[in-house]
Length: 399
Ligand SMILES: *Cc1c(COP(=O)(O)O)cnc(C)c1O
Image 1: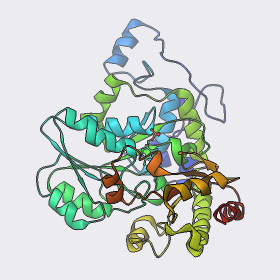
Image 2 (image 1 turned 90 degrees about the vertical axis):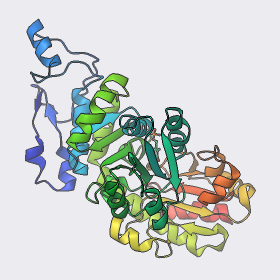
Image 3 (image 1 turned 180 degrees about the horizontal axis):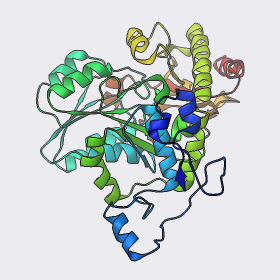
Image 4 (image 1 turned 120 degrees about the horizontal axis):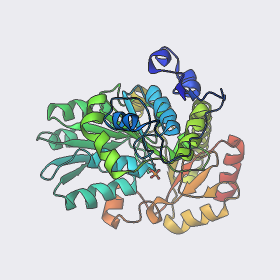
């Protein structure tokens, strides 16, 4: 099983080439598609080899909780795409978020996070970390003064999501990274909504990037997965031993699905974004849809930052706030014939969800108001169908 594409070889490749060929390994059989190494363990020719591999003195695999050839293809491809020293695959996006935080924080330390977050990320910050003596402060992620205040004292780690789910608020990553580094904090960015193609947190000074690969990286609704990308020091000092001994490892089969997903990521994300921009424009012109939020539209409150940080491309998710609250939101969703009611996103199929009653139902009414998650708000993940068919489905449902 030879690694036929090394990082050095791939460094000069452009993104599309990296996505198709990065990390490729081939067995003696010369297969063109990556093989699936569905094995938990590996055998050794002799006891001395086993000892040397465990000591890290010989190359080679030992046990799939620690490393697996198929997972390594996915990891190497992700590291190249993100421009990171290291990538580690996890069983789900939440396993990646949990590991990226838990591997580094200690009792008595402080974490600062943007308060607009995926529901489960918020659970880890508000419910899990405090149980172990970690102080967590949540700030309005769009308010520069709030970050300045929160990051005026020693902080272990900053966690944020941009664009945020489901409000699509955008955080100034460079500014937050500068403030965080001044007080010694490590910045972890959940980059799911931007995808690895639209926004590059490491280039903006952030330290760790996490993904739910379940979303655009698979992009076809087949399997769960996650990934943590970081510099060599963070990986060696914090992440590696934590992952090794807690075991949130990705299945080789899922790694194969996701590595193949990366091959078409650029094509798919480009089409997702084109479709989402058309759908957002349609909704914005339709009074019955209420207030529309889409980072790619000039009426987004942080459009300038979207230009600077995401190349002006708004991503694949559009939210809108139907006048008439939850009853009207449910009525419109129930009338859809093409778009499915589902809480996943980044899928080839267009999916719609009502955050207040599903992904964000755990929040109190006050927290929902604070975050701008209204009773009539729906989140639409725009898929790869013909944009006109998506628009016509929304049109008939809103009528
Ligand atoms: C889906 C999602 C996650 C969690 O990922 P899973 O693969 O479902 O565990 C984390 N953050 C964001 C922004 C997400 O959209």
